[in-house]
Every structure is written in structure tokens, then in C-alpha cells.
Image 1 (cartoon, rainbow over the protein chains, first blue to last red):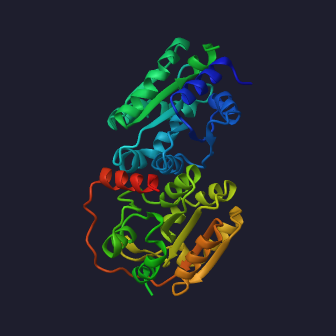
Image 2 (image 1 turned 90 degrees about the vertical axis):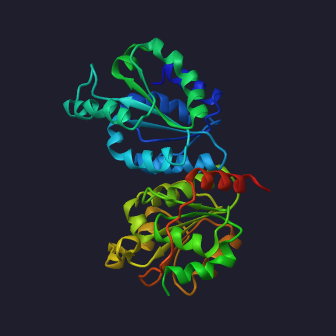
Image 3 (image 1 turned 45 degrees about the horizontal axis):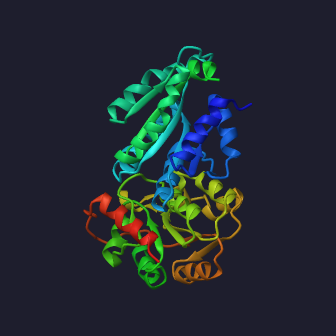
Length: 168
Length: 185
């Protein structure tokens, strides 16, 4: 069941002009994807893999849309080349709402393995990175979204288990 | 006919259309044959020509042709299911299937062996899939444009490349002028 925070995130996206979202699901993002599917202002086209999704986003951007991608942090292991040679090389603004699995509260040990690499990969790729840990961290989302358009870069918004547990 | 010959026959059909062209030899050959603002050249990121073109077709109404290759489609095979399940009649995926990785030394792809990309596209749910000879490719694209029906065209041609230069145009320039072409009346 979607919560207020899920609705707030989608409202922030629509107010920032985001009208195209592709996603690969994560349990932590289930609520926000549920709201996404009830939001006619945003065309939601699920993708099978995150690099494919970034291709869709690049095309949508060139068609005049403002895209975003919802994905899990494990996918950073999939998209390094696409981020570098498509999104960064052609300067395409792309907010990435990322479920940050493998942090405190994580029940699945294997998720910790990619969590350990998550910020290192983002840092290595010079991707502006914001980490939502406390519920109030989400207040920065509208600012992050306009910053993304301004600098025309991929921008990571990591949302961890504590954030999703405590945000109402 | 090799890919270069197919591209040459396509020029009168695609020159005024939005084209997203695959990385490596296909983009370089198209650039050498007929560089236009309506062409988006991929300078990297193997496999995403179909996705980029499809993303473009999803958000605006002009026809979009993705010129892809068999090796590149194999690397992003699931794209066919995304396309099939979100059909847009302004989208044409043209797979130049020469059964080889043309940009890397013409090594055989599995499409050059047992795998039929037309059968895969059909199994993914794509409704209009045609496999054509190199010679009939331009006509097939022309028909798909005229019918304004989402179509996947698999063009069977011979392996081989011509010597053309690498594209040195700035990627931002490629994107900006392409976006201007998308916006123009």
C-alpha cells in the first residue's frame, strides 16, 4: 500500500516536469511505483534492465520529455558503461531514484555486497549523490530535481531501508 | 549486398526521417553517406539503438527508425519485449542482420548461426515482423512508413564493411542538432 511519502515523491516529480519514468522494480520502491501507475501526467514504461531503461530515457529526453529512472543500487553494476558513454557523454539530465539495499535494516545478506560498492561507483563516476536516510531528507527532492536539469547530469538519490521505514 | 549497400538504397526513404543509428560501422557508414541533422549517431553504448529510438517514439508523434544490428539486438534482446508491449505506430526497428559483429572484425553472431531474430521478435509479441532480403529492405521500410504501423524489419545481408572514418563530431552537437530536428515542423 502506498504511503504519503510515495505520493509526495511522485508529486515532486510531476511538479519538476518529469513526464516519463522507466523502472525496474524493488520491494522498497513498490509504493512509489504503485502511485506512479496512477499518475496520468507521467508515462511509465517498465524496462527489463536498467541500461535498456537509460536508453529509453535518452530517447525520451531527445523527444522533449523529462525522464527519470527508478532502480535498485545493485543495477549500478549493470549501467556503468551506459552512464559514461550515453548519459554523461551526451549530457542528458537523469534523476535516478535508487533503492539503496544492503544498508541497516536489510534482511538479505547478499544485498550488502553491492551496497559496499554503491557510493564508491557513484563517486568514481563523479555522479552527484544524495542519500535519503531520515524522513526529512526527502524535503530536498525538489531542489535535487531542478539541480539535475540545470547541470544536465545523471544524479543519484539513494533511499535506504531506514528512510522507507520511518517516512510516513 | 553488405550493410553499406543497404544503407545506400535506404537513403531516399529515410533521409527526411528521424533515424537513431547503431554504434560503430553503421553510424560511420551512414555519416559518410549522408550526414543529416535528423540522424542521431551512437558513439558508444552497444545495444541501445533500439531503446533510444523507442524512447523517442514513445513521447512524440514523428516516425522514428532505429537502425540496429543483429549483434547489438542480441546484447539487448529484452528490448523486443518492451517494444512489443508498448506499441507505437510511429516506430520502426530495422535490424541489419549480417550475421556478424561488423565493427570488431566480422566475428559470427548467433543470429548468423541458429538464432532467428524475426522469430524472437514475434515470440516477444511484436505484431508486424518481416524478414527481407538486402535488396528488398528499402521497400519494406517505405511500406512500414506508409502504413504507419509499428514494424520490426530484419534485413538479411552479407557480412562486410567499407573503410570510412570515425565520427569526430562532438556528442553534444549531435544531440543538440538532432533535438532541433525533432522539434522542427
